[in-house]
Length: 110
Image (cartoon, rainbow, N blue to C red; front, side):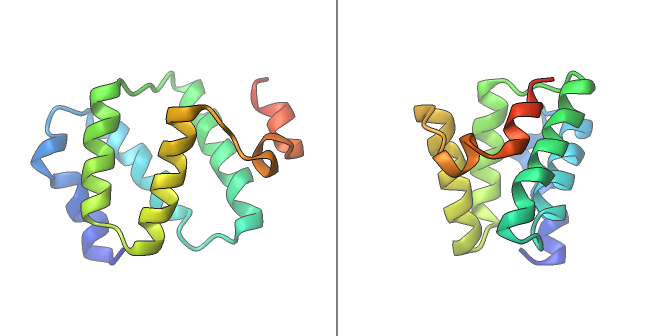
């Protein structure tokens, strides 16, 4: 995603009813992770999720659908694959073993 698109997605009318803090939190998660290697992605995502938990940040289903729709509009093919994988995990609850068995997952719930 280009720098302009990193800012444009947050201005999409579909997101008008979502708190700006939530969108900025997502921007941090999505765009700070764009240059990470596969090995460093999980620790980063777990850290971001913990930050969200501490701030009691939650998204309802309609917010998630709107965000995903907008992100897909502004994503590359590679980014779309990642989004689809995460949404599949969310929908089915089937977490790949490489994630489920990662040592950091044991400390995530703490």
